[in-house]
Length: 119
Image 1 (cartoon, helix red, strand yellow):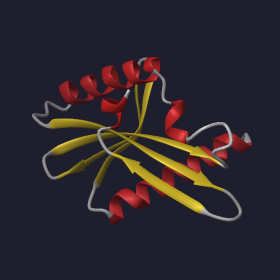
Image 2 (cartoon, helix red, strand yellow):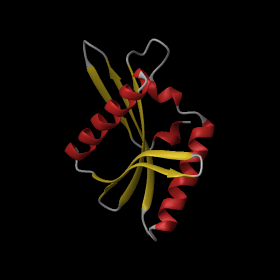
Image 3 (tube, rainbow, N blue to C red):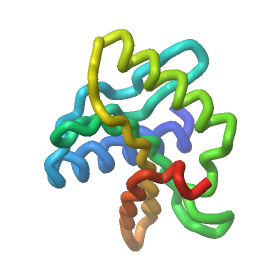
Image 4 (cartoon, rainbow, N blue to C red):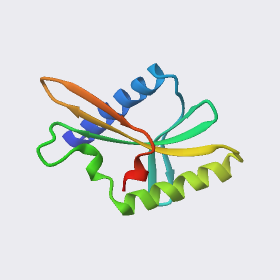
């Protein structure tokens, strides 16, 4: 497996652990719909949360969350719409980003709630 794929998988597991520790229930990992993939679908109380995980070894090229582009957002929106219809859910939906910087010195996790409001 390519090194960046390993880092991504490790980041997703860190994000899952972080979410569980903070009272979220994990419903799906790597949910796919057409060309879209939602890294994590979680729920906290009555809110369904689609989580995009971005993991980097440094912020040299920018913060991890800056790598979520409008095309990715559009794909995530269509995937979560499908998920809600498929599961026949009546919930509020929120889109979060968990940005992780992990290197030999540190692991830094930042949880950006309602992240797409900032784009």
